[in-house]
Length: 111
Image (cartoon, rainbow, N blue to C red):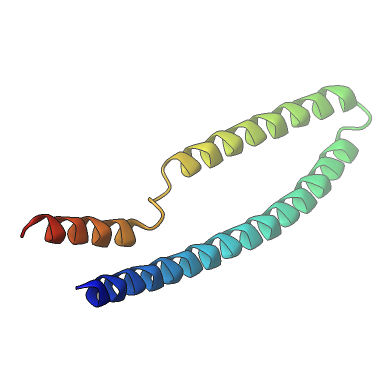
């Protein structure tokens, strides 16, 4: 009986390890892609800002720069809110392991 309990716990710990590795890989990939996207977006925004500022330099320079600042701030706010919502709706970590532990508990309750 004790050997089977240790065997069961060993398999559950292996499952935790596999799920942890999968979650780590997913998080690293998302962070890397996010950083690359942010880098390219910043380069594009800097170039766009310079282009627009040069185009309107003689007539509406400060109004254009103020409008661009507002657009960028609004974009940052929208992205921050979406990121926060994404964190709140993330899947439960170790869901399969927790499910297996629940099945084990039910199995040991039924003598």
